[in-house]
Amino acid sequence: MTVALIDSGLGLLSTAGWLRHLAPELDLLLLLDPEGAPWGPKSTSFITDRLVTAAHAAVERGAEAIVVPCNTATVTAIDALRQEFEPHVPVIGTVPAVKPAAVTGRNIAVWATVRTTASDYQARLIADFANGKPVVRVACPGLAEAIDHGDVAAASEAIAYAVERTPLHCDAVVLGCTHYPLVAPEILQQLPTGTTLYDSAEAVARQTLRRLDRTTESDGAMGSVDVVLSGSRGNFPASAHAYSVGRALANATRVSREALMPEATCLPMAAPAV
Image (cartoon, rainbow, N blue to C red; front, side, top):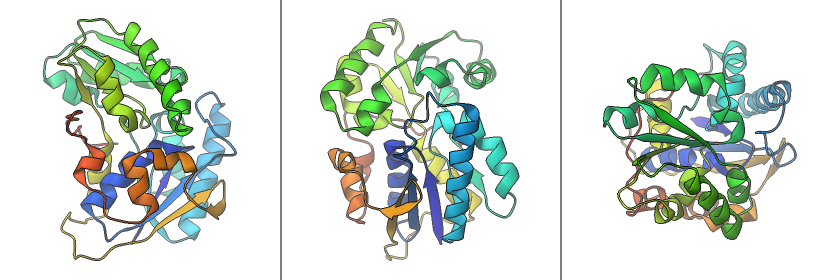
């Protein structure tokens, strides 16, 4: 069984890693779009067109489920994608883990791209799931792009900028962009001690398995990991090797829980994805 994950860049690594960890026998088809990246600043029509085109290519290659491990793409085009492919091919989107963070009673900040932060979708998500608690919305310009390039210095600067605009009383930070878990240890290092991060990658992977009626019990087989770059078969970008989960996927090996959830980060599992 083949599962396709579509994103403009490395934001798909964490969700792909969780799928590989939970169900290593699945064949993964990872569709990146270096020619169109980053999607964040692009128009709705651009993002929708790239996403739908990639999804058609994935289905032609045998994909039986489509995962959109990107908050921006989910906000922008998930409805169009579902209208095109469901019910025959399940489409799983990604939303920030606001609900599980709110349940804890903590003071919440949501870090996301500029586009997602400004979206009505995120505003509705907060209104629906924050239990009436105030939520600080923090845009993180340049962070996803730095992570895509494997630029540790630029990522650190972008994180510092986001930390400056995150009130000290916020002891829970929801990672509202799927790139951000790749640098979770650095984020926690710069945030005040005791801050907890919330991420949705594991929940998206588990929701994918539910939609496919699959369990997390592996038969020991190892599926393939194939990469498509803007429509052409290719290899992982060199920058993917900057991250432990990227190296494991590039080598088509098992992905450990430690590679996905370093001990220092303590990322709780989020509520089910959309």
